[in-house]
Length: 429
RNA sequence: GUGGAUGUAGCUCAGUGGUAGAGCCCCGGAUUGUGGCUCCGGUGGUCGUGGGUUCGAUCCCCAUCAUCCACCCCA
Image (cartoon, rainbow, N blue to C red):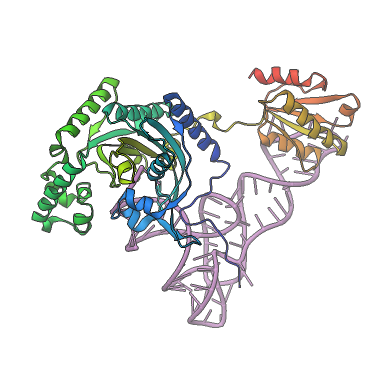
């Protein structure tokens, strides 16, 4: 008869107070960066009609086939918790006419949901920052997106720890032709294929190229390469992109086997990876999806975008010890009322000082306790200064200022010009 | 979805077939209005959950749930 403990859903994590300063730091860096590049934030619902994802991501992808959180609402409509952000972004942009004959640079951030087996860097609710650009078909915008990510890595101190992989999938037609070629090649070597690969032969043959199975390596090495079979226009696009990256001094490796898991990609695809996170090494990935808008019922609109996994980047910052010291700001002032009357004074003094020192972090002791224990709390709070109000102070309209971090004698100050004194003290470290 | 490892106090972990311990944390005291160091004392666990074997299970067996790692997939 014992009550079952209610706990968080598997793969969905609480973000605890200890962690949130790092998240806020990361999110702040991203927000500022987006503003600096002139991208506007868009926020869309977490739930969409199931058909949106099925039609955009691809019916036969793993995401749609077995990873979506899909349910019926009370009307019997099939709804799905978004497994990624691009589809929602396109839907919203179309729905509100944002793509009507104009260029849009958008970004978003938020939770995504995929029903996978949880693992390091892989969760059922995870968070992404996504960036999308619409209405531009040249390689310059592809390059801009990559430069933007490179700048973020540099700001975060990650640039030396990630590598950029690049590939082109060509046009949809070229890729379809190549796919047939590849399937034919694999069928000629059917006996070498492992179980996974045989399964993927007709669902997602391009992914077989990515296999880590050493037994298949020689056969894969001789397989036809996608880059050799893409159309001339895509090839030119790709060459101009690499030229731009060269000019900007961004290093990359061309990975002819780089295939993205979502059906809507075409031409440029890229991935930033790290070796520091175990098997979940992709930290940011994206590419061009020129056909998607039309596929979802809009006018043909070129588009590029990418998403980065916040958990993975946070994890990376932690494992590389790149968490800035000041990510978690401490209190400036802790106020203690030494007796019953003093605690009321403390509460009111806290309010007064917050008016006068709006940028300072001030905490008033609550909950009573012995004076000694209050001092202990002040110390543990990490505050630089403590203000004490007791009978003596009250009688003279004063407070006692105590230095918790410096070897300085405490002093009595008139409540009158307290704020000014505190401001001076806190400004000089 | 597949394989492996692990679940004992808020945290990190010992431990034994006879119903549990340490360190840290937290609280109180050694000081009548003064923290950090030290000393003393205290709170806190149905040993993940449910079955089974046994006189008796935290320990052995099974199942289940959760976490971690890898595969798969992906951010």
